[in-house]
Amino acid sequence: MRARVPASSANLGPGFDVIALALDLYVEVEVEPAARLTVRATGEGSDMAADATHLAASVAIDVAGHDRLSITVRSDIPVARGFGSSAALAVAAAAAAGSRDPLGVAARLDGHPENAAASVVGGLVAATTVKGAVRAVRMPLDIGLVFVALVPDRPLATSRARQALPPQVSRADATFNLGRLSLLLAGLADRSLLIREATEDRLHQDYRSPMFPEAPQLLSRLVDAGALAACWSGAGPSLLGICDGADGERVRAQAEALMKEMGVPGRAMIRRPDLEGLVVDGGDSGLFDIGHSLRP
Image 1 (cartoon, rainbow, N blue to C red):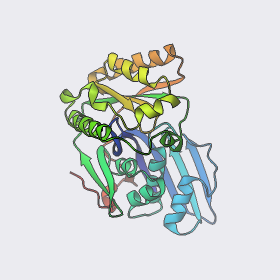
Image 2 (cartoon, rainbow, N blue to C red):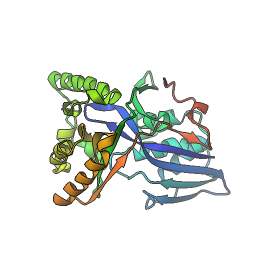
Image 3 (cartoon, rainbow, N blue to C red):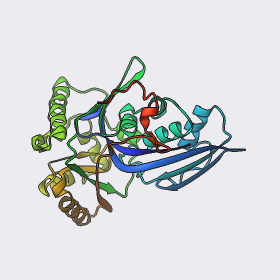
Image 4 (cartoon, rainbow, N blue to C red):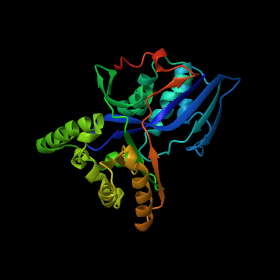
């Protein structure tokens, strides 16, 4: 069985650990019966160990209950760059191994229900865990938006990025983020309402900036170049400029020039929302119990 799922960008500024957006970068996993375990990988992440420790293998073995599997992975999702590569890989491997609940499997193993939910459902998703089950709701998304992704060559492991966060936050900071999240969701639903302040955040971005010191200036300059708003993508270090579709290429070109000017090796690319989510052998995620998720 073969499964394909999109990358995801979580947080989007104030939506820390609760919202994510599916983007048009993909990982495909094929799982077939075999005499013994074999793992083959191409594209992003192909340097990972090709054995039972590979995430796709561990997920498929967990679902199948044995390791007599041939597993093939093809990915164009950058690893450790803030695009939910682990969650996407876990969803694809679980679905390809025959799980009826790939969202539940991925959320349990990867620990990020919002990333996994976006990869399964597609579009803009709010997700959390309620009584042990993932609850995901697809939110309205203006299809006229595009996303300029700045992807530095330097990786940043999510675990390391999370260690930079304080164990507690003030009521004022929590309230600040809730207000900005309301603005962000309204702006993502209707781009005419999106303002640069909608992606402001007091829970994670500033704490992570020392690990990517150029990020604050890059974010500010993205908006100066024409993005409606800008934010970290997940735990970073990739950054997103949220743009009107008509402005995307101009913002991308200026962002690429800015990275060179600031001496930040990497690439700037336009990404569009993926609205399909999980696709299995030409079918769709409607074939699965997606963890009691709600879809419009």
